[in-house]
Image (cartoon, rainbow, N blue to C red; front, side, top):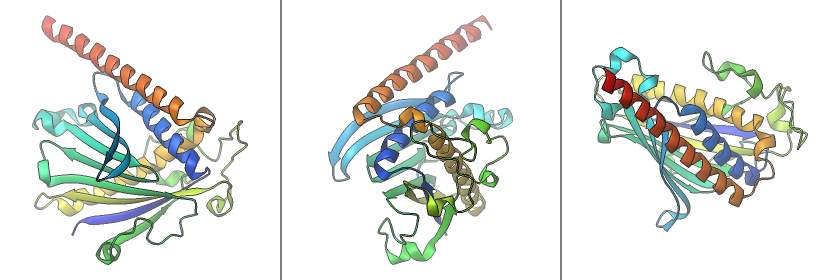
Length: 268
């Protein structure tokens, strides 16, 4: 049975602010992750108006070779080390599909998100049918809880218990019940469906994917919160300009490193 989980992440900002904050944090994270000729390539970033509705469509390519043990890289094809992400951001509803050319229909990671001005109490935020609800497991995430991070993920500068925004006065998130008392507030409802159709490994891999997804969500939202003074007050025009600048820098980084690798390989 395919594992379906709904993660509910309450944040100390408004729904409108989160729209900008999320896009800003994603762009900045892409810069941090790209290096060594790898990382993130922004292939498409444009508005859409079709059967999906209206919003911003993005297609990104993730090169993950450096994150895989060398011995594994030697025995699997290059296509297996590249992930393709398509996203339809029709905020407050968003949908993301992650695939892999090598795995084809055997691997798919679907995330549907709804952003609401509540504290995580809406029982069917995404309006899914009863069959999905019957299989869904709900997980409430506290971004200030360090125990949800994996080894090496903790960063003091991104700890919500230590960060206080100078522009907004928000923080510190030190109280155990901060999600019930913070103002302003909003919640991300993320319904994640992990599909890995490989006989004998499906259950274990799908559970692993959810474990990684959960820790990544926590780390990402800690980054987003600690960047409040960077994105606060930014409008969509400034945000799109920032995204364009990031896309150019990402391309330059990957091109520069690829050329350097080519020269090294040529000498060998």
